[in-house]
Length: 409
Image (cartoon, rainbow, N blue to C red; front, top):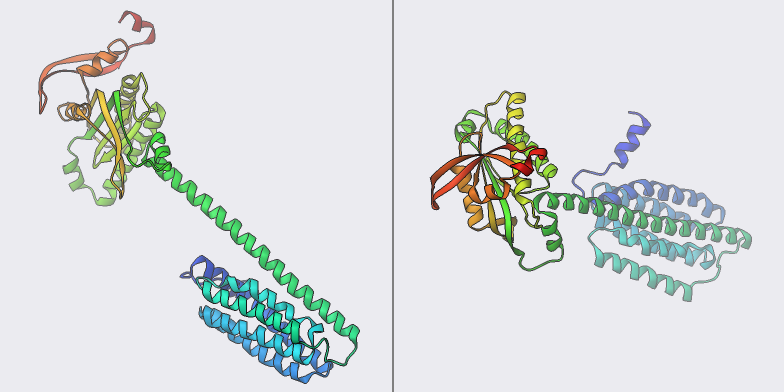
């Protein structure tokens, strides 16, 4: 195993850890060996200073840090933090007793205050550790000897500066780490929020999404003139019995994704899909004058899109299409998995146009025909009996009238 692979495996947090615990795991695994090394170097230093008591303390400190590292690697974070706190507080107390305030070891208590809040999900324990460290600092500042060590004061001054620099550097690095965590969290939240926005934008029309953001209690509107489109795959049930679940869903996904692209192209609103049925509207939730024209153009391209899909995928799918125009009520219903839906006689009639239509035909009501007669070509189907509606004059939409001929149509 290479050194690079070793360190990568050593610093890689277990997959089942949450983000905060994983960060603590990596930080502790990377820094504790350095803490152990510093305490090992302190052993000969204190022997040279003729303070053997502190050399012994540092031997126990190395053992304590090894226990902290072991606890972290076993994900026993509370035990690790208690050992870590005990080592710093006891070490500081002994150092002030045997060497004095002038050595500067007490400044590491401030690093303990900052690092205590790295402990994930243990706010009360973190606060207790921080308060204990501050209390010890106050006590030591009041009752510590300035320098019980009788050695060269210049050496002690240099060591004091070194300890201050190390403690300050740790505090600065902690602060930078916190800032990095905040930055990463904000970045992750921004990405998550963007994904949520895109997801909601795919579920709700933009105007409805804005209303939801403003937490409107009830979202409901009446549209005096709008158009509704229904399409349904003919013989879908036998088809679903022939295909595997994966193949069936894949087929519908490919087909409906093409229809979704047409929705964007023609600036209409996809309301929902129900199994193999596809529902679209124009003029809702933002009213437009040419709603019927938008939906007619969409329906013609929809029909062409289905034929091209069949050719590319060696399929023979056929759909019935129905369109109606009139007054519609639109709103958001439900508290869980809520949706934007449409109601009214116009919607029911559009559904009847689809169910009473013919394969491959765009079946429209008389109301929609009157709105489009000067721009589109129609074939009268005559008066037919519509379930729940009675006799109705209906039409098949055939195509667009060229713009140069529309004035004389």
